[in-house]
Amino acid sequence: MEETRKHLLDDFQRDFPLVARPFEEIAQRVGMTEQAVIDAYDDMLNEKYVSRIGAVVTPNRVGCSTLAAMAVEPDRLEEIANQVSAFERVNHNYEREHRFNLWFVVTADSADELDAILALIEKKTGHDVMSLPMQRDYHLDLGFKLEWS
Amino acid sequence: MTLVADKDLALIEALCDGLPMHPHPYHVLGQRVDMSEDQVIETLKRLIDDGVIKRFGVVVQHRKLGYTANAMTVWDIPDDRLDEIGVSMGRLPFVTLCYQRPRRLPDWPYNLFAMVHGSERNKVLEQVECMAKVLDLETVQRDALFSRRQFKQCGARYKQRREETRS
Image 1: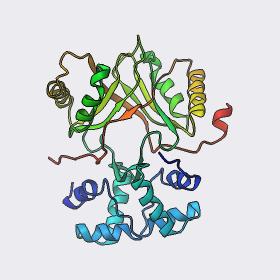
Image 2 (image 1 turned 135 degrees about the vertical axis):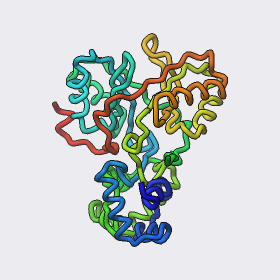
Image 3 (image 1 turned 180 degrees about the horizontal axis):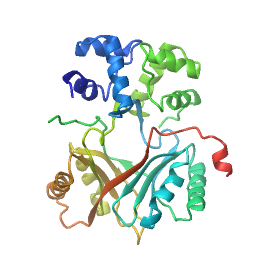
């Protein structure tokens, strides 16, 4: 990966400029033009190196969320996973190596709504959901330190 | 903790898919929620100061960048040591999330979760070993759940389309 792109990935994971023309400020700091910065981020978004430039919200400060797990028969995993992903309020959905092999995050406006969505997911999939809401956050999110080899 | 106002929520919702790639991204964002460019910038600053927004910036895709090994490590920590261990674990450089969550006995005995990303499986396992040694947790029951397929990953949605709750 080019040096400038590494800077665009590494240096702006937090404290992204909150000024009228943020890409221009970044351009000055990395020695590119504003348009080149925009194009580079656009490419990295299209290539999926970057999932978005935006806000990581503190859990349970906005709405109500939980990490949920299901134990699914391996030969039905893809089918059940797709049923879970189809819920708009599911924003992460992963297979993991465990008896509980499907893990997903559900976000709602309130605790009642969250319970209702989990109940709907159970009904739709015919599988029990184990809900593990966050109780305390011990991690200060400074972004992810990438190691370039 | 302050409650998040509807107007703030609308802005956070508009940001779910990320900033538009435009020279004036906050202006474009503001048009979607009926706020001026300045109001968008000031609101975001306030939400960051208040701790509602934990981090504002580039969200990278670990997998695509070569961090294909990802383990959710889970630990059964004695309750009286949880805060001390949690704080220390949350500071380790390769830990990207560290949360207390409830046990669900008998199925699930773990109360501390820490996400570890690495370039390969063995490195992640070494890091988990290292965590156990450094934090004196070698006798504690633990597991590392490596991820396989990613079925969905996107920003959280805070407004629901109504049809979903009806079906």
